[in-house]
Length: 164
View 1 (cartoon, rainbow, N blue to C red):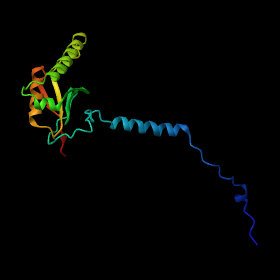
View 2 (tube, rainbow, N blue to C red):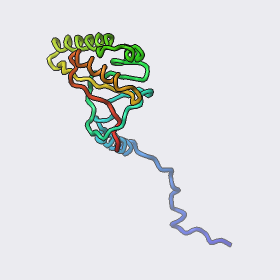
View 3 (cartoon, helix red, strand yellow):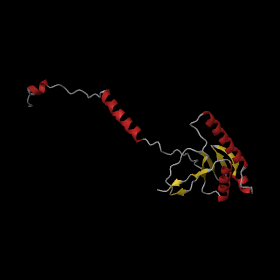
View 4 (cartoon, rainbow, N blue to C red):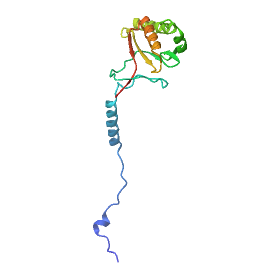
């Protein structure tokens, strides 16, 4: 025969299901948001590389800056996402100057200079970033660099993967 419950157990209230207050959740989400914003790096990958390109590997530690981008794939030369010339024509040509590339670079320089006349914060610096596939012949890279120099883009940088 069981014992009758004591007076304390009889008067005890039944447990209620727990509830969360919205204020505590907002505090937690605010802390998480501030942590993520603080740890966000603005120096991340600002260089979008075409998946078809296989860039060479280097020990360089310099972070890339925003510049005019010239891509040299195994079949074409691309300036700011627009195909300018086929690589076959460049390889067959005996001249160092690539005429379609020169026209595209001059057009880009004129556009930048026009913006610079209207906005003093923008200046034409003559900087170009070449993303060259590691399988292209050096002759093609030499011709592209010569053409960039002829168009006024004298500050040439090559995009590479950093060896870590």
